[in-house]
Image (tube, rainbow, N blue to C red; front, side):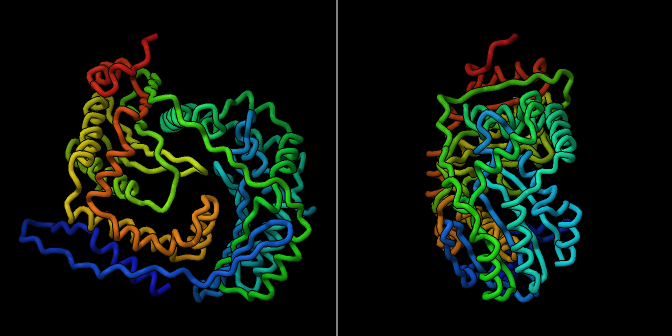
Length: 467
């Protein structure tokens, strides 16, 4: 842990900007130390006869361990019933193995932690952070939640109504509306496209039997990977894993359902009459995650951190928006880059013009050496911080497992980032961020916003017809 903390401080120091409080001669910030190679702790991985994978990672000095059961089941598997995976996960948290949710919560508390059930586009996770001596009991409890959920009939109505309330609220939120429309442009006719804001009527028709059937059809050992990271007795843990999971059926293999590429870019406009700001999503599909990080470097320069070019331009210089940002969204077998922003209505067109200008600026000229040094420090600093905790190590290992990257992705990350060059980052921006291939979603007052978009040559010809 001390090694990680020192490295994180050294890496981030070079990315910091020192601004004096009063006018005076500026002093150069201290030079960060040279980034060192990253070594994962000693890892033991093995597979049970039923196909379930197990990874044990001794880590840290605190007498605790993080136990994560990651099952490759999520919104990817929803099919024609969006959010059935969310509904099933919610019900899994309502008790298992004949024990109620409150009884499980009490057991977990006595271990020094609690049980967390989460679901995403590609995975469902059940996790606990517990005292070292309680790790075998935590494994048993997680196994029960994964294999033997009670699905109590008396709780189903409440759980479903909570989700319906979330759908209703989301349908009024410009950020949710924009993300839903944007995802549909990039992942058409795919379960990912309905994961943000499903149809309320379809979800309301789901039954307890539907949730049970979804769990039975999708959960199994061959889709599951158990991670134990922290301080623990290896022999006791391996015995607990065997006792808790060896009788679980293999179930189906992990699902490969990468979304097809969209036919072309699309502009979507959603009217919110009288809105004082517009919510935008601008972006396009990019290659799935691999060991090439040049595009991540380009994203960081453009909008991936607070000192990025787009943020400095439309937030600091122009005052068009408060918190613009860009990111690469990584799904199983697919990915897309997006720029997000909430922009004052009257500045929607000018702000988009500035975003486009910054993207083209990176495509036209390689970034200067000092900017490259800053983004390398930032990328490596964030990476090391993410691996400085039990939780972080387990989740990063789960990430590389989901995407089939291998632990070498983590071991080589720092050195790969250090090897980025201005030319490689410029080339990534040119190859993967072509403006004429980008989709745009705008949620706002179209009476004010549409004329501004009509003045933008990059999108004027793609605007949908007025109603």
